[in-house]
Image (cartoon, rainbow, N blue to C red; front, side, top):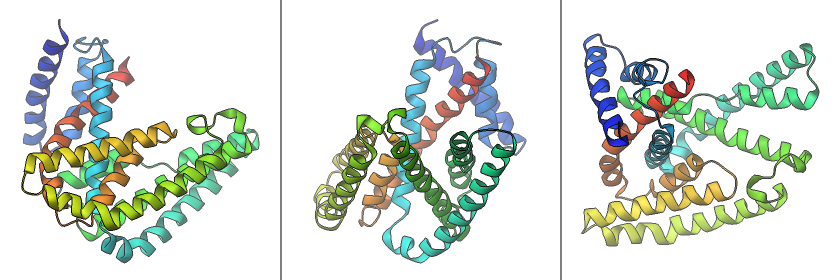
Length: 282
C-alpha cells in the first residue's frame, strides 16, 4: 500500500469513527486516538511508515501554538498576566517540591530527583488547547487564564532546563551553545522581536492586506522562521511558533490570519493524535 493510500484509509476510518463519536457526544480526540490504535501495526497495520505522520504531527502542533499566540494580544497579557503568573508559579512550586521530596524518599540522587520533579510540572498544552478550541472557550475568561497558566509552565520549564544544563554543561547544551551564551542570544532575540513588533510587523501586515493570499504567506513564513530559529537554538519549535503568533497578536489583522489557519490547524492536529496512538501501540 502506498503512502497516499495509507493516508486515504486513515482519513476514511477517522471519518467513520469520528461520526460515531459525534453521535455519542464524545470529543473527536477520542476518535483520533482510537483510529491511531486501530491503524497501528498490532491491529490493522494501516500505518507502516510513521515518519510522514510524525512530520504532519509536528506541523500541526506548530500551527496550533501559532494560532494560540495570535489570541494573546498585549492588552490581554497585561490584564491576566498577574493571575496567570500567580497560579502558574504556585502550581509549579508545589508540584516541584512534592515531586522532589517523593523522588528523594524513593532513593534517587538529588539531580535525578530535580529532573523528574521538573518533568512532573508539565501539563498537556496540546490537549487542553484543542479541547478549549473545540468548545469555543479559548477566548473566555477561564480559557484565557488556563492559557496563561500553561504558558507560565512552559517558560518556567525551559528556564529550569537551562539552569540544569548550566550546572552540568557536558550533559548537553542547547543547540551546541553554552547556556550563558544561549541566554544572551535569547535576550538579544527578545529585544529584536520587541522592536519588530513595535515598528515593523504592523506596517508590513497592513501593506499586505490587499492580497489575502500574500498576507497568509507572510504570516506562515514568519511563523516557520521563528519556529526553525527556536529549534536551531535547541528549544522547541512550538515555543518559536507561539512567539511568532504572539508577535502578530497586537496587529489589526490577527483575526484574519487566525480564521484562515483554524481549519488547517484542525486538519493537521488529527495527525498528531494518530501518530501518538500509533507510537504507543508500536
